[in-house]
Amino acid sequence: MKVLILSANTGGGHNSTARALADQLVKQNIEYEIADTLAFISEKVSDFISWGHSYVYRKLPKLFGVGYRFEEKHPPRFIYEQCARGAEALYAELTEKKFDAVLCVHVFSGMMMTEVRERLSCKIPFYFIATDYTCSPGVLEIKANGYLIPHRMLLGEFVRNALIPADRMFATGIPIGEVFYEREEKAEARAALELPVEGRIVLLGCGSMGAGRLEKSAMMLSKHLPQDTTLVVLCGKNEKVYAELLPYASERLRVLGFTEHVSTYMSAADLYITKPGGLTTSEAIAKRLPMVFINAVPGCETRNFDFLISRGVAVGAKKWKQVAVLVQKSMRDPSLLEKQIEAMKLFTVHNAAEQICRMMVHDLNQ
Image 1 (tube, rainbow, N blue to C red):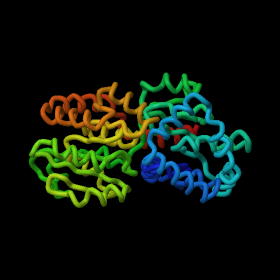
Image 2 (image 1 turned 180 degrees about the vertical axis):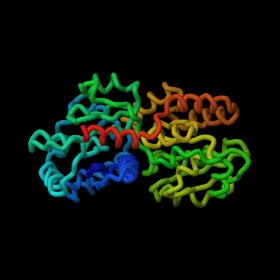
Image 3 (image 1 turned 180 degrees about the horizontal axis):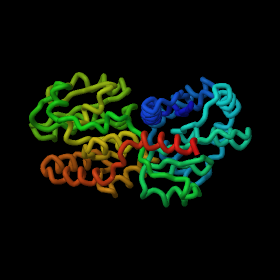
């Protein structure tokens, strides 16, 4: 059996999902490849869209939100038509390398595979995996064999918004790396990262691209946290923010660039201040790490914000001053953190990547 995982370089989350699925396929002795969906149109198109997405996401979040809300009200046919341009090249790849199935971890890949199926009469089954806690615009355009969604409470939304038959949807959760299911001792994680074993650790991060006003927020928060608290800022790939914050680094304010040890930092922490991205929040939920959301980027993350807070696994605010108040309340009253942890225990679906791969194999063997 051979599986193609179709991702897109529009932020780190989709590629993280792809890697989580790939790790499970390896465990099940299934051959796989990961490909960038947009590269089937052209490498230049992929680079341009990835750069444009990153720039608007980080620099013009309000414009990002306007575009998202427009797509929610108008079927994104233009985007579908652009994705359709790569159908022939993708079909050639599928047939030449004799793939048996395709896992799509981005709306773009689901659209392109739909065009391959409908225009080129491709019979290879494909599965769409939603990576946000909402039915994103564009899912309506996808005609997949199966839809793997983040939570059972979203079944109705996907049926209403994307007209998907309920028997083709499965609430598996969002695929994350197995390392996030590991239960490391807090003291051991702190020692490994050379963080204070005593006191409290608060993480501040806004995804792999470092979105949001991290530099100003970190300085403000560091002044208002209790004396026994260390603030660790995860700047991701945002080198500008990292350079601006580094001169202020101290024992109580740790500044990190991109790191492969996010799981260990989560094990070491008592609280995580972050934007509500689908992958980041799923990792924190699996780690039982309480969260305070800052609603940094309008759009699908606004939907994540509302859904996850309504389930009790996080609290949040839209302004940094309000976030600081929530952080202070959480530090003063540990019972607030315990309530989130208990909600996370009820929320978590264990190892979504494993479930999805086993489900796909079962379907193919029917």
